[in-house]
Each structure stands twice: as structure tokens, then as C-alpha cells.
Length: 112
Image 1 (cartoon, one colour):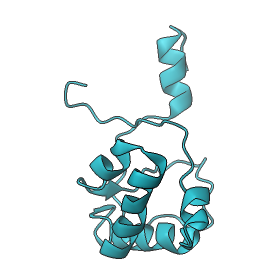
Image 2 (cartoon, rainbow, N blue to C red; image 1 turned 45 degrees about the vertical axis):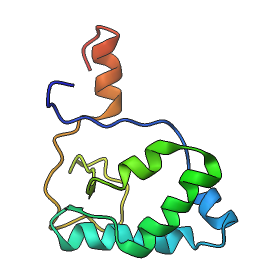
Image 3 (cartoon, rainbow, N blue to C red; image 1 turned 180 degrees about the vertical axis):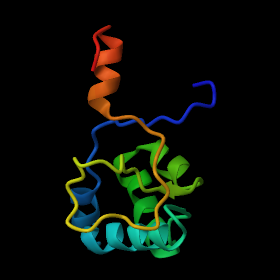
């Protein structure tokens, strides 16, 4: 991807798999978010959360989960008026990732 920032999404919701394995998915996500916000938007996944997610690598047979744990997690926020969060992610660096709708329009050759 030529070193350009990008977001890949495979459309897999890991929360149900965490819950099925006895892990509180909301607490896991919150722990990752808190760590990222504490470190200005990007941080290693906390050990307990990484262990919980690592189990899913074997259970779901999805190797990219473990691969993703080897790099820092990042809060992705367009810092726009469209932010759905009640509280903004203050302290997080603005992401250079683009809105998915803009990318779709660019691929289709239309102006966003």
C-alpha cells in the first residue's frame, strides 16, 4: 500500500466469539480503548486483552488475529461532526484514514 495509511476491514465481529469463550467483550474493548487514549491514540493491546483475543486465533482458525496483536492498536476517528461518540476521543491524534464512503466514491470514479 505504498506506506499510505489505510484501514482494512473483513467484517468480523469478534465480540460474540469473546463472549462465547467467557470473556467480557465490552471490558476487553474498553481496556484497549483506555490504553490507546492514555498513549495519544495508539498503544499495544493490553496483555489480558491480547491473551483473550489470542485464544480466538485457534478457536476461529483466523491467523490474522494473532498477526494484528503484534502491532499497536490505533483509535481511528475522522474528528468530524459525524462522530457518533457521546465523548470525543480527546488526546488521540487525528487519523489520516479516510471515510469509507469517500474511498468508495473514489473507486467508483465519482466525486464524494
